[in-house]
Image (cartoon, rainbow, N blue to C red; front, side, top):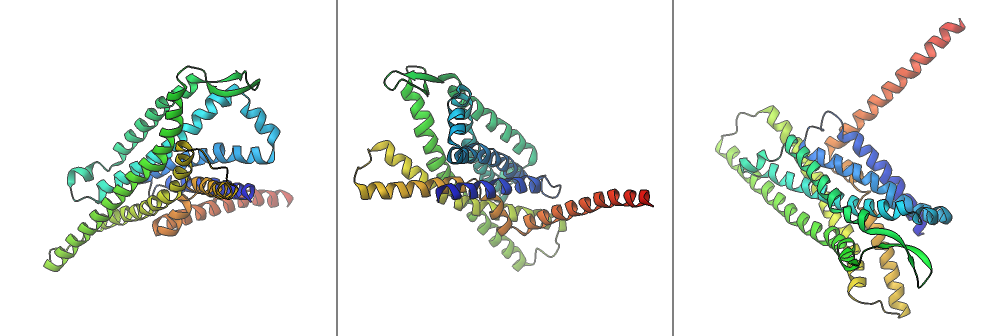
Amino acid sequence: MDKYMIVILYIIGTLGAILNIITFLQKQIRRNSCSLYFLSSSIIDFCIMNVFILMEIITTFNKPLSDRIYSTNIWCKVGNYIMFILPCLSSSYITLASIDRFCISSLNQTLRKCSNFKISRIVISMVFVVWVLFGLHILIGYDRIRDITTNTDRCTVQTSSATVFIVIDGFFFALFNGAIIPFILCIFGLLIFHNIKVSRQRVNFHQYRGNNNTVNPTRIGVNRQNFHMILMLLVQVFLTIIFNTPYIVVYLSTFYKRLSFDSYNLFLYIIFSFIARWFYYMNYCKTFYINTLTSELFRNSLRKQFILFGRHHRLNITRTIIPTIANNR
C-alpha cells in the first residue's frame, strides 16, 4: 500500500505544483505580493516532488538504481544538501505569506505598506540566500567514509564535531519544520482573523453612519483579490499544522527515548510512522487543490489559462490543416 500511496502523491503533487506555477504567473494575479510567495512555494514544492518522492519511488521499484545513486559522493553532499534546504524554504515562504497577509489585513497604514510586490521580491531572494548559506555545512562536512566495523562506505560527517551536525540536520530541521513554523503560522493566522474581524466591524460602523455612500470600484477589486489570497492562505496554514504535527511527534519520540521492542507497540509505531510520512509529503501536494476549492479568483484564472491554451492549440491545428488541404488541391 505504501508504494502506491507514494506514486499517487507524486502524481498529484507534481501536477498540482505545475498548475499552481502556471496560474500564479498569470497577469491577473502575479503582481500581488502574496501570489509571489505562493509562486515561490510552488516552485519549491515541485522540486521536493522530484527529489524526495521521486527517490522514494526509485527505491521502491528499482532498488539497484537507487543503491547506485545513494552510493555516490555527489548524492552524499548535494542530495542531502537539497533535502535539507528545500523543506526549510517551503516552510519559510508560507510563513512569509502569512506575515504579508497580516500586514495587508491590518488597519495600520505602515504595516499595509510592507505588503507590496517590491518588498516581497527582496525578502524572497534574501531568505533563499540565507538558507543556501546555512546549509553549506552539509556540502563541506559530509562525505562517504569507510566504516571499519562493517567494512562498508557510508555517508557521514568527516569532522570530529558530529554532534553539531546531528543537532542541526536532525533536531533543528525537525523542530523548525514541525514545531516552530506551525506555531508561527498559528499565531499569524489568529492575528489575520482578528484583523479581518476588526476591519469588518469598522466597515459596518461606517455604513451605519452613512459615511460609505461613495464606493471606489478599484479599491473593491483589490480588496476582493486580497480576501481570496487570505482565504487560501488560512486554509493552507490550518492543514500545514495538521500535516506537520505527526512528523515532529515521530521524530522526537525516537530522538529522546529508545523504542520499545514490544511487538504491539512496535506495530503501532510502524503504522503511525507511515501515516506521518504520508502527511509530511501531503503538505507539499496540497496547495493547488486547496486554492482551487477555496478561491473563485484562482479557479477563474486557471479556467482562463485552459481556454487560452485550447484556442492556441486549435489555431495551430488550423494553420497546419489548411495548407495541407490547399496543396492537395
